[in-house]
Length: 113
Length: 118
Image (cartoon, rainbow over all chains, first blue to last red; front, top):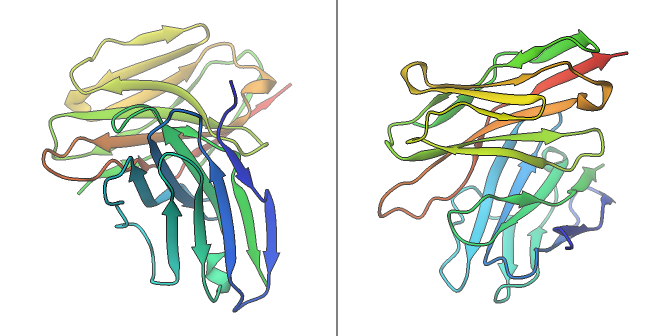
């Protein structure tokens, strides 16, 4: 079946602009996660959603970052007033349930000029 | 604290050689999961394996094998008879099950870049 999809695949923006990144999880997966991967580094957790529970936002680096998810469908990660240090690949993952294996999308490469 | 260490930044081997990727983890939890993911040049992370902390049996899947040793907090990954298509960055990750907590995040190591030369 279809995997996790993300759009856009690449985004170039100017410092100070806002960006929205989109994630479509695997159908039926109740849990959705966002991670950030800076060049040459491992993934850092940002936020996760599980059903209708309050999201775990403990990994968001600043209040410029926010994410939303409606039900068990699409999620958007918004970065306001982008900074150059926000340049990274943003990866989304979903899993059938809270403790299940996470399956990743192809990521959105964000470049802030 | 929870941490995953992949001390090998880059490894280069010639095709058909065996190669072992090291992973050492730290956690105070008694119940946890360990993972390996492969990230080929295309960028998408591919799930390879998940082990829980109560199952120390080694696992073999084709040319891949995993050695989990709680005594040394290690979860090493061996590729036998490596092939060019194995060239990728490999990540080890940890997820602790914190009772009563809300965390379900994966803690990743920094990855090991494996280059298999023809």
